[in-house]
Length: 336
Image (cartoon, rainbow, N blue to C red):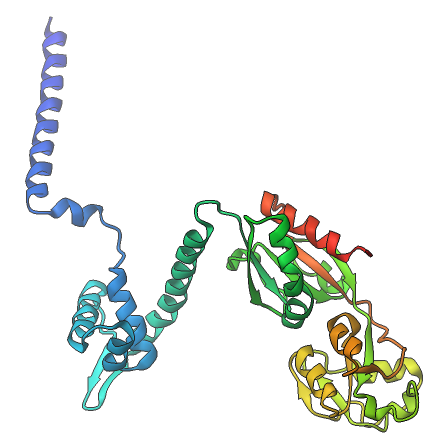
């Protein structure tokens, strides 16, 4: 009997504790404390947008103009943000404002996150609920000269798929980016060293010397010895290309590394079309210029490098959009 009374007393004590806790909870709710307890430590987007714009311009006035707000509104938002984080983000001076060290660090973190959030929102809006979006990284000239002209065919076959393209010229970690795949030009050794990926070869890269027809004169082609005497257009992403080409032909070319340098194949091809010199470019990227007579192949000897174009995807990735895109790419690389 005594044990039963003790058990009952313990139950009553537990119930009383729950009642007291509930009363405290309700009293906190009356004063708005629960919202503060439950809320994550994330400032308002308006405050972050004002801060990012002011940090970028180093000016409240220009930030206000960009955001269509008053300078006072921007100042109040930033003051609210500073109170929220407990750190001064700007230093007020006679000539305006400058970022503090903490403010500069915070701006570097906030800017890409706001841009990513904006892009994610645009992706949702553009998909109209279908979520058929492929985010693609691509080497720029291959994207503009080969891929983009063929994208209308993809849209005809798969109207629900939208491809977003950004340029990347070097390997990267997919986990640190929003990309689903990458179009990459490289050697088998480079692909093997790209950790955490699976690759599919699309096209071989046939790199040959091309030039404006004026350099050929009455000839149909030029010998490597003659090319060595002409102005050579350099590719900044492949600085040793001309030296490798001349060595493969057994030709001594002291000026192999001399000449104007361009970052993209499209720039190099444009310079060659203008008659500036001879360029080493992939034939498939200058097909239009060769067909139109703006460029001619100066020598049929290709650069002896085992480079090709690949579709690179995160290892283990298996989704419908990626499979459709890969199948479509492979169909585009087959001979008609």
